Image (spheres, rainbow, N blue to C red):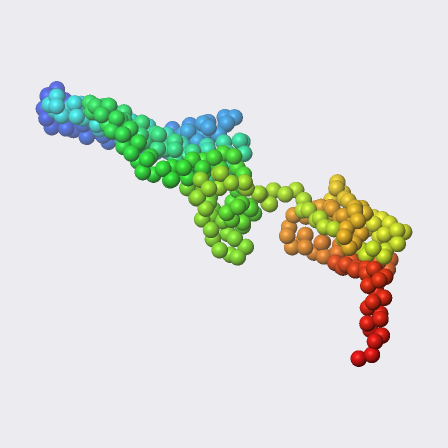
Length: 367
């Protein structure tokens, strides 16, 4: 026993021994793995519970986003410290130092990358009432910026002159912009549509180019399903420069037409028909009460015209047609009960007496 203890003490005293240095390095790496497991099971759980108690969800999302990178970074730190205990050359240690700093930048990048694509943008969209397409585009742009900045910092860490690279990107970007001018205009058109929100997926829209239901929206194109069940892909640069009628955002549906009755209709009968139609519309439960017009408007060429103008409460096309049909049948019933006939285009021709007498004489002559 005493001999073993003396051997261990002599081994520790002989720190310059390569095997001792390797053993210490391995021990440091094992301790880093142990700390990683402790962090995962205990420390991370405690920090996450504390984050749940805060007033905002940002703390919780931040902890979740950086949990994986911090665990891996603990092992990297252990490996780097272990390398410090080995008798390595200055060149190797310089490379190891650059790798260590690059690893730190990469793990920080991964954390922010996770944060940019997490639930934080979804919560922000709910507070600001933003479309999901806006959130998706914002997440992609943030992730691209994060990766680009990370690559730039790592390149500088390795003493790489990025000024020429940036200048090359500028020239290349100019050439690419000129070559992809139409694509760029579509992308900016998509951004304008996303920000202005003239329509969303599921809306019924009408433009000079297409009419139908919006089925999909992207940065470059918008897909519209027409009522003939055809799928039309419209470039966003076209949609952003056209007048867009969004029928889905109607608050009520309009019904407007002229009802022409015969000129032989007595004034009292016409007045009674107008009053009954107006009273019926005002009492109808599916007619919006704000705007209701049923009036004798003008004398047409072959009819006395009654203007009928109102809105239905429903916006559903099928329900709207059913209500309109019911109202049309009721108007026909009122006209039948009052003995008023609907006019049709007609023209009366009058002849002078001289022409009439000559025609009578011609008809009276025998063949």
